[in-house]
Image 1: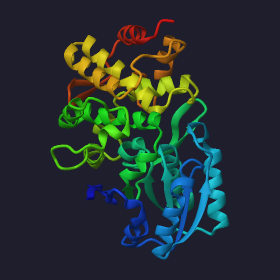
Image 2 (image 1 turned 135 degrees about the vertical axis):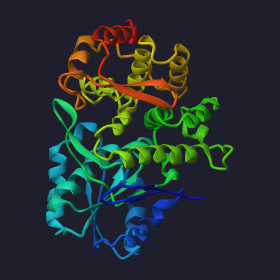
Image 3 (image 1 turned 180 degrees about the vertical axis):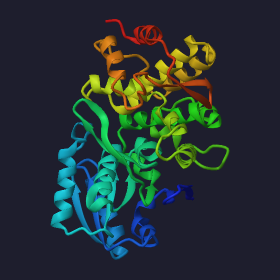
Image 4 (image 1 turned 135 degrees about the horizontal axis):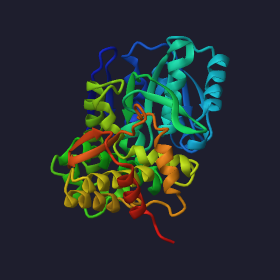
Length: 373
């Protein structure tokens, strides 16, 4: 069984295809999109040995000429140097305006491939084939592309939409447990900001910290993992369709991310992965909302219990300086007129955007979350 979700945008709409085993249909799915014959697959040394041959075969069987660019794995390589490497291959292989970049990997590969596609020849086609849960439900959809600057995450980038997103849930069977849990942070986010039913569905599961626990059937007849993928992608498609360039509503997708980005940059993008940081950020946002009386203590505890069920950390590392976190919040892309904007829940399934969070409240919440050594 497969599902198709339409991302409806003023300029270019595109489909998210969710299909177990769908990797083998990559070339066939691209054929209807009027793309040129040259395809450059961008991947990394972790993913490419697992799925590169299948992706190449799927493209070549559909008549595409395929070349590859393998970039080092990890957030630490999400920089302009890596983009330069993609450009170098694009020149060597004579890519044209009608050519296509295919991102085969997680969010880092997707963000960099999209940014290279947005800027090469002022914009060429690109297709997302996400291989991590985090990329499937979040990074691959919505057209945010970019790289990190040494002083901040994703400060260099562009809005640039893919022509197709192809999600093969079977690929998740090879995903390391820590990466699976990181993706679950974004899934919980959709439950809190948009889809209370998804949240409730996950609450009924005794375990959520490994792929084997979500491969079970649910009432809809789908497996829980496919239901998670369908509902999460639908939530993101709904929000992005209403606000492509983050003028207003789309900011709710940053729930938990304000403090998460600060924690990531202060730990050098190496110790805490994105999903772990988002887990901490959602706990902080939920606790801030509870202390400001925006939602109940009970709802805040339900959220924190679900985050714990996925095996994600709910406390800050003890060596992270709270003052440094508060300073770093000022560098966030969402700062407006010097005020930090927070996305805070008013109930499970509904959030609001506010810049009226006192620094004292932020400090109290962060201090209460810090592990005392």
